[in-house]
Length: 94
View 1 (cartoon, helix red, strand yellow):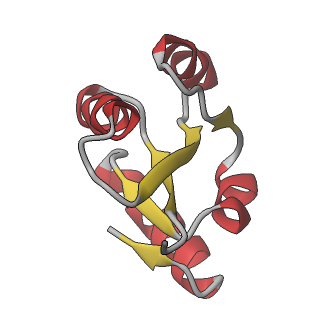
View 2 (tube, one colour; view 1 turned 180 degrees about the horizontal axis):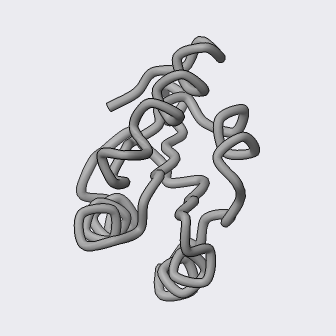
């Protein structure tokens, strides 16, 4: 059996929340949600606590080493920082 791909979500608004809920539900085989981050960390903690398998809530720079794929669901203004940090660490970004 192949190892599950570890996913981290940056941004816990409407889109990030829906992606997190679907991953937590097991809607995407072969992946596991392991970390969340948001500019509003309280929002991220609330989302994590609402999930069946709560992921870690960490900063962007703590999230990247934990995951294989970063799912960007933040504001457009944050994209440059997220992309540079993620791609600079050799990780995939969606």
